[in-house]
Image (cartoon, rainbow, N blue to C red):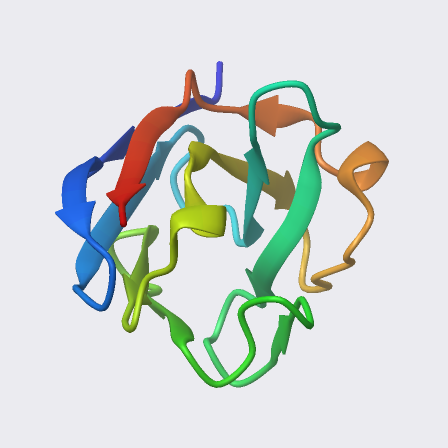
Length: 124
């Protein structure tokens, strides 16, 4: 059984920063590709950033490139999303996703394991 859990959301003013965390627990020794996706009210869920199991490979969505940084502690299977210079349009529920293996695809359909989501609200 694989369990995914996010933490770190909250309310912040525009221009501020937040750090999200995500932990994956499951079979010992299993490597996971991990990613962040978000869903704003009335919109479809969208890709934010992904990272491979070692942390050496990353990819970002155009809307967050240059402002968000994804990283991970591979030993702990914990992933982070440092969000700087936040904008009101970043307001969304942020979901952590994981998949077994070494790759880190951008497509949501490639990730079978999902957390419950954490709310990020950016006020103007």
